[in-house]
Image 1: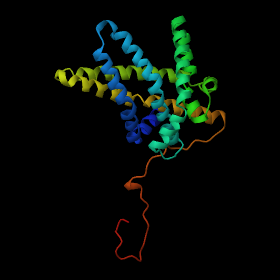
Image 2 (image 1 turned 135 degrees about the horizontal axis):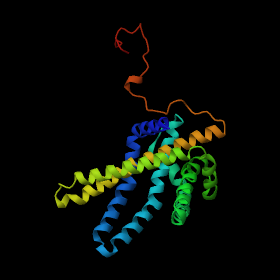
Image 3 (image 1 turned 90 degrees about the horizontal axis):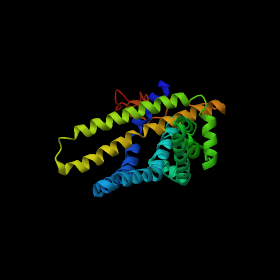
Length: 255
């Protein structure tokens, strides 16, 4: 459990530029639009308009960002280099399927929560791996639910634990950030809110990364596959190979 969390954080840290890029590309304009809508709404229509706009943005654009994070996590865990445009292209190819699966997921979980709460939570855990099923295994909308149900067996309590911890962490972070901006002048409050929302959305990409690692572990166990021992990381200066060249009188003592 802790091992996968540490791997998720390591993958997030090693792919900061790509994940920050997708946050700026998707979440920044979405948050600007949502906050403009809220700013122009009256008190009576605020709740309904904000709720509808947020839900629609999560279905349409949150799924694409999560799909991108899924590709990043999978390529990193399989010891393959991550490139922004190819990863975005792979996510976009599966974007319609992810949107459809998100709609069905929300309907099913909402009905379960309205019924007795527990069925909604249970369905959310069964279907937690639909994005990696679609993006990595080319599963269609319907098949992604059955594949997620199959592969999530044995991991659902862990996923639930991480979901609760993640929700608490995001809520606490958001509250602290909003409190820290209380001293700002009124004319800076709007950009500060956008910055906070985008930052939280960016950090929330750790969640699809973690779910992707669970998917890869479950698939490897079921299908008898081997995973690389360590996720891929870009070589740095300290990783350069030292080649001895005794015949070169001008060679560096180090290289």
